[in-house]
Image 1 (cartoon, helix red, strand yellow):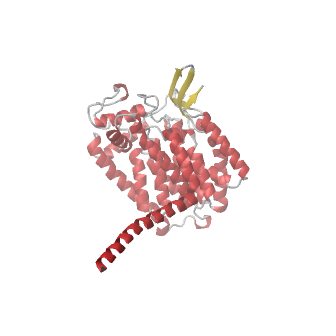
Image 2 (cartoon, rainbow, N blue to C red):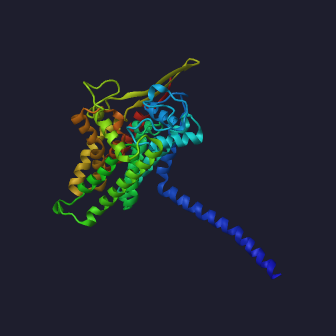
Image 3 (cartoon, rainbow, N blue to C red):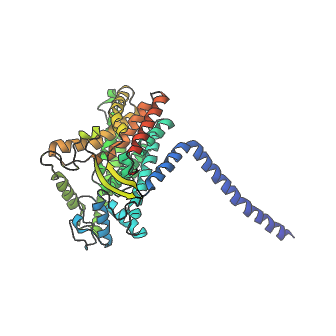
Amino acid sequence: MVASTEAAAEERFAAVEPARAWARLRGALLAAVRAHGAITGLLAVSLGLRIFKLAAVAGQLIGDEAWYVQDARVILGLPVLLKNLPASPLSGLDPNSEHPPLAKLIMAGFMRLFGNREVAWRIPSVVLGLLCIVLLYAIVLRLGGTKRQALFAAFVLAFDNLSFIHGRIAMLDIYLVAFILLGAWLYLSARYELAGVAFGLATLVKMNGLLGLAAMVLFELLLLRRDRWPRFSWAAVRPLVVTSAFCAAFFLLGLGALDCYWTEFRNPFAHIAHMLSYHTNLKRIGPPEGTESTPLQWWLDSGAFNYLSWTVTTHGAKQVTLFRAAMNEYVVFAAPVALFYAAQRVWQARSRLGAFALAMVVGNYVPMLLAWVVFSRRSYIFYMVPSVPAFACAIALLGGRLPRSVQAGFAVAVLYAFFFNFPFRYF
């Protein structure tokens, strides 16, 4: 009798525990939605827009997908278009050695899982584009911004057309920005070793990943008290030293490991020397031609060009697919004013959010400007992709000082420009 009573009690306990666990989980989820419901909604809308017709215009490669998807195909031993490959399509190695192979290997991995089709090589960009929005939201909060400012910055990034396009096509820039923002968030969270690893991952996508680390150096310099300059202590420099050491070690070890399997190089230093030589010699002769533009033109959203233009007429209705390398006009035009305000806030009150915005712009844009001025380096408007999160932070900082009606009006203008430049149109 006693045994049966104990068995019944155990059965009731076993039935109650899952119910309690589910109730706790549901409560935690509801609390999270209440606390961050707006950003959750923004992410849901962004996801829907990014996967809308993700495989549209089947068989077409958009922009530099003509290079990077082809590289992934070579790695996998799949059929390729020979005109866009500088090396043997049968090598099984990354034929595009001017950039490290990490992003192309990620594309190849998804193509191995989901097949040689558009959705497969674009899924990572969609995921990383959404991650950029989440990370920027978290960074603004970490820097002392309000939830409204964090949401506004995430909104601006989500509906900037250049970031949006790169968040759904297989190019390297969205990988670069995602890992840089991850490194910045980890750095601001005092997880310096992991921050170094994240910046190392960014550098394994493009050498420009080092500019993200440079931005953190500038961030710290901007926040130094003027009366303490130039006094340094180990406690003050330790975050940058640790982050830099882990970044350098992870990059060199990672590049060496990837090179041994997927490139012709047998040590990372030879590959680095090749990349530096290639990009130094990628010079423009005469005025910009074709898709090229100068870094000064980008502030006017000039230099925009088409990644893909495709028109189909069905039953008298014209459907136009137009992927353009162009920023949201209201975002890029507001950026100089917002950055000037951010500089004021840094000077007057050492605003952490303002310092981050300035550091990210100086760290990512100024090297492009100098390369153009000093080396006559070829440049393209999509080199502004890493600077858009900084624009969003500066605009959010300025927006916090403006009436809500002005903020709402600007948000409507951003949405108007976004949908006006949306890649799928119907007439």
